Amino acid sequence: METDLRLESSLWVGNKRYLAVLTGWHLKWTEAEKKNPDKQTVSVPVAEVVGVEEGRVEILPHKSVEDTDRDFTVFYVKRSSSRASAGLLWRLGRTQFTCPSRVLRDQWIKNLRTAVKTHSPLRPHRLLVFINPFGGKKKGRQIYHSLVAPLFELAGISSHVIVTERANQARDHLLKKDLTGFDGVVCVGGDGMFSEILHGVIGRTQQEAGLCENDPAVTLQQCPLHIGIIPAGSTDCVCYATVGVIDPVTSALHVVIGDSQPLDVCSVHHGLGQVRYSVSLVGYGFYGDVLAESEHHRWMGPFRYDYSGAVVFLSNRSYRGTVQYLPADPLLSSPRDKTRCLSGCGVCAKSTERLFTNTSDSGSQYSTYSGEWVSVDGRFKCVSLTCMSSSCAKSPLGLSPSAHLADGTGDLILVRDTNPLGFLKYLYRHTTTQDQFDLPFVEVHRVKAVRFSLADGGEEAEDNAGLSGAMDGEDGAYIKNGKRSGSQQHLAGRAKGQTMTSEDKTVTPFMCGLCCSKAPAVSVWNCDGEILPFPEIFCKIHGQLVCLYARGIEDGASLRDGTEERVECNRTCTLPR
Ligand SMILES: CCCCCCCCCCCCC/C=C/[C@@H](O)[C@H](CO)NC(=O)CCCCCCCCCCCCCCC
Ligand SMILES: Nc1ncnc2c1ncn2[C@@H]1O[C@H](COP(=O)(O)OP(=O)(O)OP(=O)(O)O)[C@@H](O)[C@H]1O
Ligand SMILES: [Ca+2]
Image 1 (cartoon, rainbow, N blue to C red):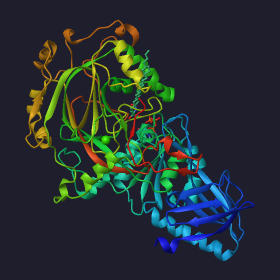
Image 2 (image 1 turned 90 degrees about the vertical axis):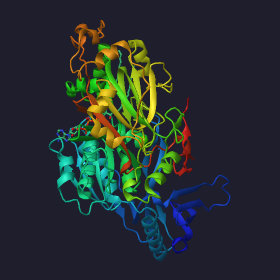
Image 3 (image 1 turned 135 degrees about the vertical axis):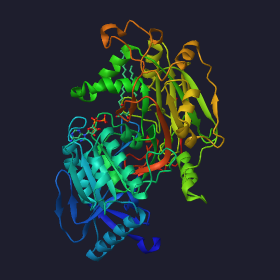
């Protein structure tokens, strides 16, 4: 195959002659002028060629074609570093080549197109696109039509576009309508819109496989439809954490070339009847309260989170609870190993091998739990579980900077009650490169499953025997390693307390008059930006349940010679600390 596609000839770009080579994997062209000592080779991986057109073609700002029979135009991915973000910006590169003859021109076009097909098998042909016209700054439609649609058209992708008219329309469509012929689903919006797509795609896959999603013991089936995210929301955390930049053109180019990034998903169960999915944050306490507060201030747009964050911070709340978790294998990785999950991450690749190879029992691709449950109880400022770093513009390294996108684990962050200054320090470190886990009231664990209850863990374990029985390790044991304080014993003696006694309250000067007259005893969960009103939940991480049109964060150091070339980055880099 490689030798069939190989092509080498002189080509002209403008008035300069180049020696061009198609090796199968790469298209390279080098200036032929011998006297020039600085001559450079431009090398474009075939998998990153967006389109090959006859003639001299431009697509932006408007499409124009000069149909000459010795010319062809190659469109490809061109990188530049972004000052504002962790990853690299992608732009559409374009080079117009002139051949010595029409025959040679046709040969170049044919070989290039075949090479592209051969080396990027996941390129979509047909996409279902949902646009939320009200997400973020309400620019979804404009972003799609001016920046994304021209790229899809250039790549020969046909799109069925639906501008949503109500919340959950996209999810319902994916659950009920005919999806035959679609290779992927693209959402233009924020994390809320992505969450709709996630629920639709996962739900549809399990429906078709005849699996019960609500049962936490069920091994869910990996979703065949890829998901693309064109960022047009307020936080766009999923996009930031999987691409490294919030940029519609970069994201559209990842879709066009059929990049594929598997993603861990956390299923959140309440009782045996409900399930929600999360990829970025399942958060109780501070993040739950911020979200609940922000719902009253939607009119502020993206600023609602900063305002609500300040209000909730000043209210200085903390909540009691028991957190039980099933630790992940500590030999594989650690949330404090100061590495970062980057494009081509080795830890995630090993997880792919573990998840999808060498299983005699087809139902056990997500390995059954081993190890023992650990229980921690106390009073927390916040309890957060994230399947990935959850980096975003507010926090460029994220909630858990060393978390992995596709390793089959989540990071559980427990921030115990502390004074406002301590908590402010914790929050502030999210905006810097200082380690937010290096504080005496913070602990972080890499986990496979988590349970949260209001009352004492031992009692709860019995209450939910059916649920925990399904999820326990091989020996099904619970360990109690947290020593109960006096006040915790007091709470344990009560039934699942939705109300609080005066002893339970921590009254601070901030509370009075600023935002609430009385602090509530329980918080709500923030599940990727959606409020879950029930505090008692069970969470399980499903390794690589969905695939995005993305490739993880490309490190800026992988950029060489300005924009066109990239060194492969098949590694996990150390954090800059
Ligand atoms: C002193 C500065 C501290 C800045 C601290 C920044 C921490 C930022 C951590 C961001 C974590 C994002 C996790 C992603 C969650 C998404 O799935 C979800 C859906 O989009 N977003 C939110 O729930 C939206 C959650 C938004 C949370 C914003 C929290 C803002 C806190 C502001 C605290 C101000 C204290 C001021 C004291 C006077
Ligand atoms: N036509 C519509 N009218 C009202 N709500 C909609 C519509 N389409 C989608 N939604 C809902 O709007 C919510 C928010 O949308 P989206 O996530 O796109 O923007 P955002 O909230 O500004 O961004 P982020 O989630 O990143 O903070 C989603 O949960 C989605 O269900
Ligand atoms: Ca993970």
